[in-house]
Image 1 (cartoon, helix red, strand yellow):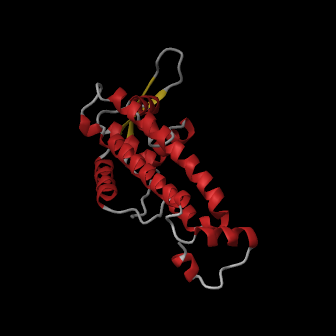
Image 2 (image 1 turned 120 degrees about the vertical axis):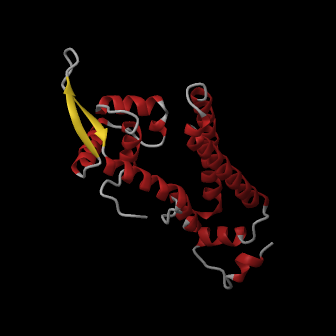
Image 3 (image 1 turned 90 degrees about the vertical axis):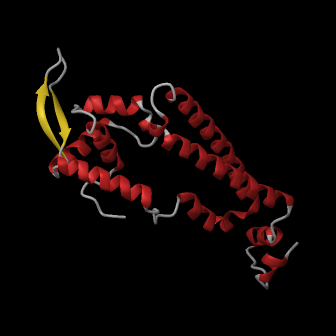
Length: 210
C-alpha cells in the first residue's frame, strides 16, 4: 500500500462527495451519513475538519467561498482540485485492486487462542457468532433502507459487508462445531495443557488424538 499524504479513509469519503459539487464540512458529513457511510468509518466533527484541512494543505481541495446562514457560524465551501481528482482515482484503484497486507485482528487472536483453553475459546466464539448474526441483520436492514434512495452500484460495499459477515459467521459456526463435537483432533490434549500447564510429551498427540 502507498504511503499517502492524507491516509485517513475519511479523506477518501470527503473527496467522493466534493467530486459531485462544492460543499462545506457540515454538508459533507450530512451527505455521508445520509448515504450510510458512517457505518464504514466514524464521522466526527474534529476528525472531519482535520481531514479537510489536510486535504487543503496538500492541494486536494480548495476553499472557494465562505457563507453565512442566519445566526450560524460562517462556513467555508470547498471544491476538489485536479490533484484531488487524481489522488481520489488512484486511491480507489489501489483499494479495489490490491490486497491489504495487514492481517485482520481476528486472525491475530486465532493465532494465540491456545492460551485460553478450549472451553473459554468455545464460549468466546459463541459470543462472536451471536455478534456476527446481529451485524448481518443490521447490515441487511441498512441495505433495505438505502435501496430506494440510490442505484445498486453505490451500494455494492454494503452487499460486500453482508457477504463477508455471513462468510465469517459460517466459518466460526463450522469451527465451533468441530470443537464441540470432538471432530477436531487434539482438543483434550489442549485442555490438559491449559489446566495443568504440562505440554504433551509428543506434539503429535495434538494431531493424532481422536
